[in-house]
Picture (cartoon, one colour):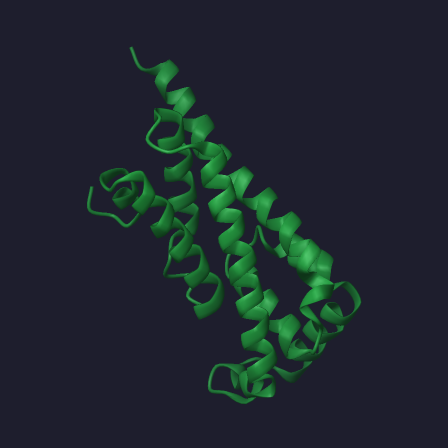
Length: 172
């Protein structure tokens, strides 16, 4: 298999956990959520856990830990870059009213937003950065990041695990 997610099944499990963690952290910090297929990686890791190549609890733990690291680094990046994110080339394309709505949402419901947006591609990457931009302390969003990371890792790898289980039972 020549796809990035297919790589997980072709390398030793210790390396597969490392690739999984690195991809999730990169998605969170580098704002490359559309380029790195973390959903496909998580589904593949869950399926590999079903076959015994990986361990489902380790997949969840590694992925959740990587999300928390990525959220912390994304928040820090947002805090350090602050308004430069708004005034940069991409940020200027976003209307001022949209920035204002996002800032209001983060100030009122940052934790809940982080929790819900963990399940929305691209938004899961932007939310911790935005929390840093508006000056929220990481301590404020950390519990939500922890809860969201475990829920997200469990749901996505669990879906892969369940799909592989179902496919095994459908095969003759």
